Length: 146
Image (cartoon, rainbow, N blue to C red; front, side, top):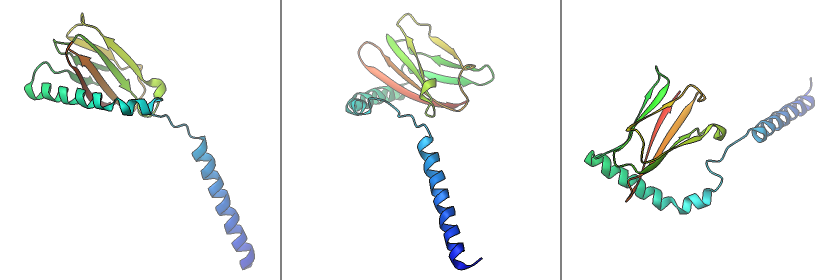
């Protein structure tokens, strides 16, 4: 084979490789963290206040929520603060938004909340816990891997 045919063959193979990469990149589904991203950015100061409130509770060891993932029993156990009036636990899956779900908690809750994990998909999960004691709002986040 002469040089001319070799150069053309290299260009054709390179163009095929680039075309295959473009096809793979454009056909991959990517979820946004949130559909209303800009509104969430505006409300971010409230989130900062919730995190700092939870940090103060934790520093004072005063009615702080704890989460424990028990892999042998396939469950997540939450020990909730006694001062909780309302709250929400969000299970967030960074890789697949369709698996996200929320659990609402009201004032007449048990101190210990158990959520089974048998139906959850394998992978990384973030558990976001937002609650209120009637005066302030709090936020904490834990991460576990199934």
